[in-house]
Length: 411
Length: 107
Image 1 (cartoon, rainbow over the protein chains, first blue to last red):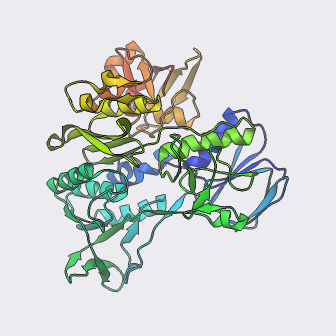
Image 2: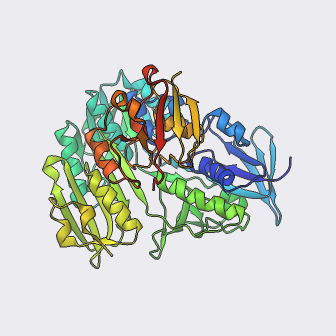
């Protein structure tokens, strides 16, 4: 087989690189290898629409078979890379099934895996994670018969599953090890609101939770034992405590890592000039132009960084600049975040959390950095555009929710 | 399978068979139609799948929800009376023949 571009990792970022390569006019061979057995699919709905039964596996597919055939994108699914070497002009990868794939350039989009809990009983049936379609199937197959759901981790994934469980009438407990929820993503005001909002919807929230072990009947989990001796009954334990970048292939190549993720520059290039990387598994220069490296586990980054990687591969390098944004749908609560709030020195509350509709704007030195919006899509759209254009919004004016945010944007 | 026709920003048309229950956005994206960006994949979170529904079908398809209405206000292209986010229009048998024009600017 001739060279071309090999994409290792068939998730959103890998799919986007393949798509963008063709859009950018690349005419060589494109091969994409994934260790899951189905074609690239959307992950965000797995903890929401898929669990509600509103989306099936076919609807989650990014593209249909005809698209891959028409665009001559060779998909190799259900096969993992076990060896890879790169020399000056290209390289070669070997899969678990023995395929040998030669390439001129390599793109790594391996994604991440859930961080596992290392506690006695964590291997009991019913202690579940959420990342892949296999994880989602495992959860869904136990869903209808489950009465007591314990969620470990008060982040996006955990709270999304908790919200679906609450709507389904299950007893829901969320155990968060920190002193507030979603602490990595939002400020204390937003954290406090989400705690109260989930409690009002029937969930029990435990902060500073200390888990000792899981109890089971020998096969299945039956409860979560806390260090204070109490036991929470559990038919399902959903663990959402973050993800780890997959670096197996990067390690085979000896690529430089940073904080356990694949280090890239603003062109998505790794420490090996023939290899680009994008998506959840990379550490990249802050794409808003602020100093420093960030890791962005989001759809927006998976897509936009992949586009930059594709440009690098076809030789029309463009530095990756984009405004990060995120969303999390938790029952009737739509959380949308635009920008990165790291380093903020002021927040402004706009609207009324008691009415389940408000925004928090983050500022540094008087300039807008980011926004959290709860059921305030107009604010989100306005702030996202404002930040994308490098503009700002006066913090005093922003506090008046009776004035549309988009009318307050200034340079 | 109901059919849906997309009028692309360059004026060309593309007709596709839609799976019952798939959205107008999903049908386009799965087939690689450019112009519908759909960054959020159908969560009504990004307003990058903006279309103008052909007036002949506008009543049948109906208008946006309050949430979608607010998103459309922030969309990148001008809003028109039949503007919708195509992720929120689920195809069904009686929508057969639906025509939508893809808004020229999505982001």
